[in-house]
Image 1 (cartoon, rainbow, N blue to C red):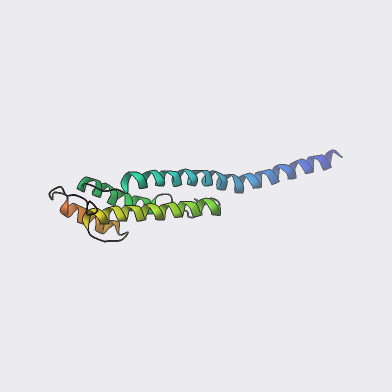
Image 2: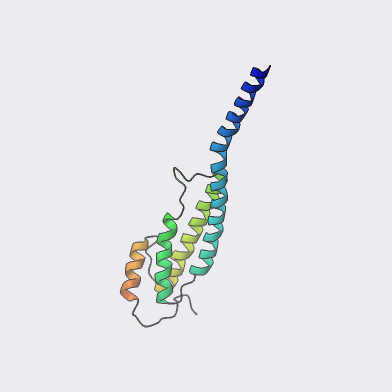
Length: 135
């Protein structure tokens, strides 16, 4: 009887350990991905409107940053839902950054952050200008 109890206890500990090792990290990453999604929303609001060359430079830099910021991959996997939301927010934020840069500069380099940074560097000393979307 003691042997059976001992074996049952070992199997139970083993099962809990397996679940903890596989499920817990994914759960923790999912929580982190939800927080990153919220941060992307804040950045979209903060950098999606460009009114100065300085802001254009910041937005171009942020565009590059979010393209590589906590992208789901090998050691960073959450639930399907948290990863999907993260990628949706990344796409919306990228789109908002590009739209802000386009309105301000009148140019369109899509999501190519390097081109945006080069363009802003070349024009950062230009006269202050009103956004192209201004009435």
